[in-house]
Length: 396
Ligand code: PLP
Image (cartoon, rainbow, N blue to C red; front, side, top):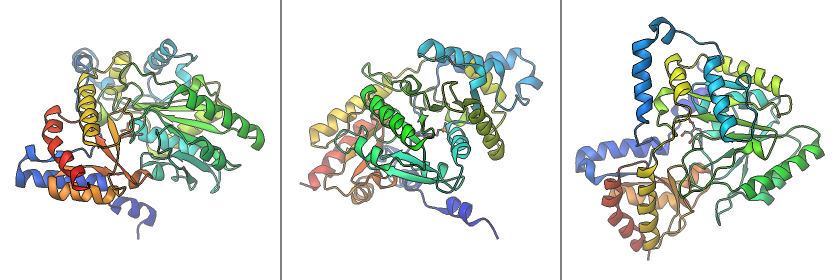
């Protein structure tokens, strides 16, 4: 006998993993250069040079017992202080080391927050479509519910009327992923201010805090001078979840944090509950070596030239063929309307006829669109363009 919930998670099919596996298998049949795989969000630019240099320096200079040993459960004080100082420098926030809890990536940060905020089976987390499918797992982990705010399919900001209508006495938090996976859209300051107004009103009406969980692994991935508003600047009850998985191309190193600003309601208790939840899932003492690396590289900025070139090439080519795309200002995703509205059928046809692998939006709670991860080589994009053209023409 095993736990059926976890058995279900462990055996559930994942369209992204299936597409990726199909691509690998097809590459052996038709050649790697004839498979156009836009399925995975795995960074394709190397980590900044300073990351590698810092790893080498630490290995050469530091005591290896310390470097490969345990840190304190919430992470090193010096690492948390470096992160807090960096947040203070960049944003209007008074972050302190004691408000930062280091985690093994952004996923356990989100799970720990979900656990800490779920107080009954009625506890509800509002997720704005389109959203990262793992939210369905993360935010129900402690027995609470996910409630979906339907997408604003015009410009993929946030459907404020729907958000307001779905905020009720059981709402404990609204999850905002900015820049957004899968749409590549950056929520504007105006959108965020309006959400803050709605939530403050609802907090008063229901007499309890309603948090924003800011899921920000793509915070630094923005193009064309677009700014990502730091949500604690517009809404006090914001909990920030972050990782360097995408910004420093370190997804395999599993390093991130939760930041609970002192401005949050019940900030100290909330921090302690997040620490307790992280303990339960075993996301404590994140890798010591990598904590020390991010401590020294916290100010490093990613070199986004390659992503930006990919974004421009793909956006300009696809729109010139007649595809409709959300404006891709951030992350490394493009969100495209399926020509006849059936993204599942489009994805299957593109796969079978052209080895073109695109992820249908159904899993992101937004059917009718598909996601392209353009963290790939520019050459692959160039080679794939005839397939995109043939696909849309086949629908005319
Ligand atoms: N949140 C979003 C929106 C993501 O896209 C991802 C990963 O793809 C995560 C969280 C998890 O990030 P990490 O790999 O740091 O756990």
